[in-house]
Image (spheres, rainbow, N blue to C red):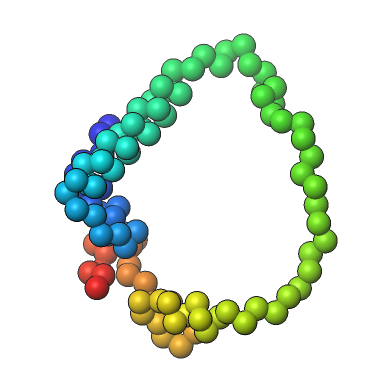
Length: 102
């Protein structure tokens, strides 16, 4: 399954990225290389591997949770292309075509 030029442009639109034709071609190749890698992984023989055999046995160090006040809410909201009160306004991406992003 190859990623088409139109799919790359749609992904760029959803990610709010401006891409020119050269970048579209580069991204298309990059996405297809990733998909080819996953296709190769499907062909790996795992018949001799027991469940859980490849897991790491390291323990992640834990830290105590701490509550801290954050003063960055307003500055983060100011960066939004659209906002309503204390909320970001985003284009619809599920259930139809995305809204045009300006």
